[in-house]
Image (cartoon, rainbow, N blue to C red; front, side, top):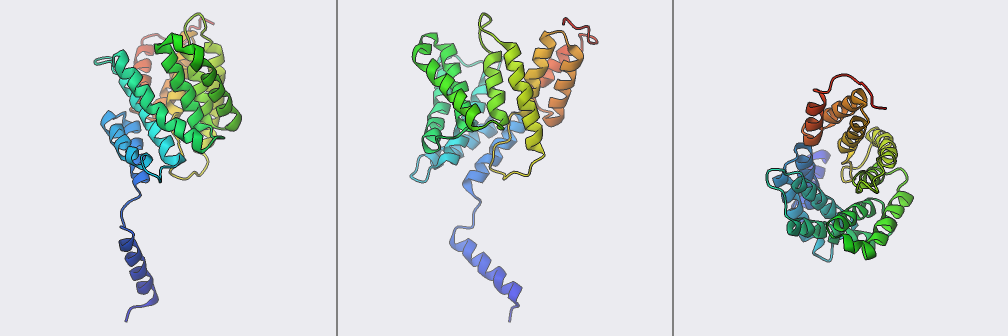
Length: 263
C-alpha cells in the first residue's frame, strides 16, 4: 500500500511517460544558445539553430520559436563576421543575414507590438544595406520603422537601446554619430543592470550586456578616456570572461597607459 505522496509521484511519472517525458525542445535550444553565447562557441549556436528550425517550420511555430531562431542566427552571423582568420565572403554574409531576417519577420507578423524582433530586424536590414547600398532606397524606411517601433514598444528593453546604439556606431564616417550611439549604449547599460536585478522567466532574452559595455569602452578609448574604457572592458569580462572583443580591446588598451584624455 503506497502512501499519498507515493500515489502522487506515481501519477506524475505516468503522466510524464504518456506525454513523452522528454525535455522541452525550445528550452533545450535556448540552453544550447546560452552555452554558445557565454563561450562564443559557433558549434553550440549552430546546434541551437538546428533545434529551433524544425519548430518554426510547423503549424506550432509561434512568436517565441521564431524570435529565438532569428536571435541565434544573428549571433551566428556576428561570430562569422568576427572570424578574422576565415572571414565570410559577401555571398555568405548576405545569406546569413537573410536567414536571420526570415524568422524575425514571422515573429513580427505574429506579435506586431514586439520590441525584441523589431530591434534585430532594424540591425540586420541595416547590415543588408551596408553590403548593398542601393537597397537603402527601399530598405532604409523599413530600418527606421522597425527601430522606431522597437524603442516605442520597448522603452525599458535594454537590447532595443543597445542595438540602436550599435547602428549609430557602425554608420559610415560621414554619417557616423558615435556620440548618439553612446547615448543609447548608456541608456541600455542602465536597463541591463535593472534587468539583472529582476527575476525573469528562463526563456526571456538576456543577451547583450557585456557587448554593450564593450562598445561603451571602445567609444571612451576613441575619446582618449583610457581609464573609463578600461573599467568598461573589465566589467564586460566580469559578466562574460570569454568575450573575445572585450579581451582584445583590454589587451590593446593596457599598453596605452593611464587616462591622458584627448577630451
